[in-house]
Amino acid sequence: MSKVWSLSDQTTARMEEATPEPEIKRCPFCGSVGKLEEIESEDGYRFNVYCTNVQYCGGTTSRCRSAAKAIEFWNRRFTG
Ligand SMILES: [Zn+2]
Image 1: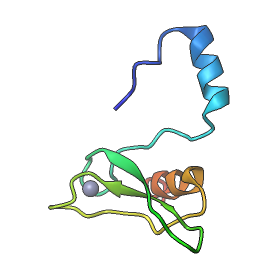
Image 2 (image 1 turned 90 degrees about the vertical axis):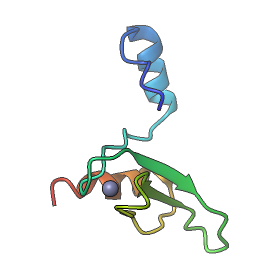
Image 3 (image 1 turned 135 degrees about the vertical axis):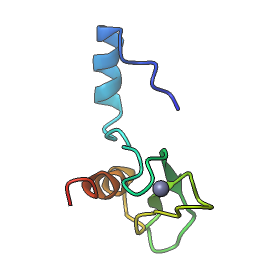
Image 4 (image 1 turned 120 degrees about the horizontal axis):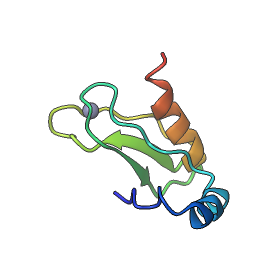
């Protein structure tokens, strides 16, 4: 996971503008890392976030039209 961009202010600011995707939080069920996945799909709902602990957890969002939406869904599970 690339979490290296927390310290250098100027590049950080620019990167945040360039990438509107929010940070993917850890799995609300098991605490493992959540991962964004893009799927080839004809209906346009190509993005979901799933728990990398697929064997023992299997947490996932439903597919969304944008990566940001999928991440939002995933992160929202924390607040209920
Ligand atoms: Zn999990």
